[in-house]
Length: 303
Image 1 (cartoon, rainbow, N blue to C red):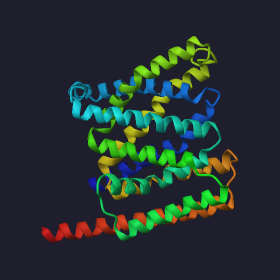
Image 2 (image 1 turned 90 degrees about the vertical axis):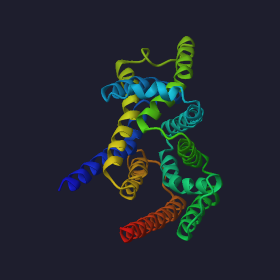
Image 3 (image 1 turned 180 degrees about the vertical axis):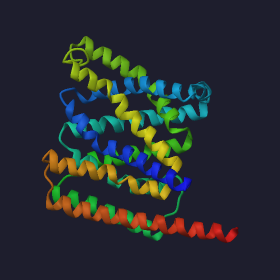
């Protein structure tokens, strides 16, 4: 009974996390009168502020100093900080420039990009159905290239930047909230210098537009930290395969918002590309579930 309650709670946290990630374009659209780099700078600043509060309330600030002294992990976190900042900036630009559909595509293909990066950099081997999934996703991307006459750079940049972020974080295993705090802390000086500079140029938005804009920029910390907090709570209560099923919720919500609410064009070329990528994800998920079931049976046999 307790296990069922924990699972139900985990599902609620997963829905909250991926739901907020999915609906985040509404937030970034609401402040599209603020430059993407300006928003990114405030996202870093207010994330640091909120994460200090969250870590303090959880009694985990003591974990920060030993990590800052750990050069082996810090050098990797410096790289991951740069990568996630690029990812955030591209995503903000995508939403503000009316390219949510491309952002959605990027996060659909991200799990398959992660498989590819594992093959190239971690010497992981591809199972047969994983190879099929990667080939299907590649076919979907090539269909976009041929149909539109252009490479979907924005989608690929989001997918590969987030994929490389996960790859780098594997080299510096740190708890998600603590890791995110240190990453944003590392980028904080750059963000503060940039915000000060644009303020001196008369181009800063904070305190210069209206109270709504100021509050929305401060809320960037919530938009960044809350879904991660919910995600970590979900991860504690759900199996990895169950949690993995929720990762497609965010790009699906983004897709619906892009086409249904913001009027982005969804062509026949898009339909074919997304169909191939959805098929790839179905193959990938089915294979992952099959392998997990086999491992459980094997573990049961050992007992």
